[in-house]
Image (spheres, each protein chain N blue to C red):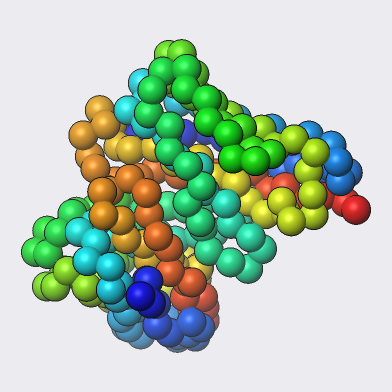
Length: 114
Length: 111
C-alpha cells in the first residue's frame, strides 16, 4: 500500500529559528496534504499541493511539492511558540484513485523553546 | 455547524467487552474515515467510507467494524476489545476525499 515517510520525528528549536519537515514517497503522488495537530488536540488541515514543483505560502509557512511528485516539505520561518505541535503530511492511496483513503506520515513533533 | 462530533471523549473497557464509538457530521460530507493514533505511529486508517452504504478497509481494520447507513453517521464498533486497541481514535469527514475535518477524538483504554 501507499507509504509516506516523514523526517525528522522530532525537532527542537529556539524561538526565532527556522524549521523544516520532509515527506518522501517511493511512488508518484497525485497530491499531498499537510496537517497540524496541537498538543492534546486533533489534526487540522493546512494545505493541499497538486502540481509538480508547486510552492504555496501561508504567512511564515512555505509548502513545496517536488518536481517528481514524490516528496514534499514544510518550512517555517522564524518559529514562534504558537507553532508547537505535530506536523503531518498525508497522501492518497496508490495510483491516486482511492479518494478518501488518505495515508499519513508518522509526523514531526516540533518543540519551540522561548 | 457543529462539524464532526465524536462520543464519548473518554472510555475505559475491560478486555473482551464490545462498544461503539460514535461519529456524526452535519456538513453533508460524503467521505468519512476512522483513524487511530498511537505514539510514534502517526495516524493509521482503520476504515473509510465514500458515501452512504459504501465502506472499505484501511491499513489496520482487524477487530473493528463499520457501517454507513446515513451520510451523517459513521460508527466504529470494537467487537471484542483488546489491550492493543488502547489508543486515541479520530473520526474525520471530507466533501472531496482530500481535505479532512477531524473530530476531537476518543481516548480509549482497554484494561
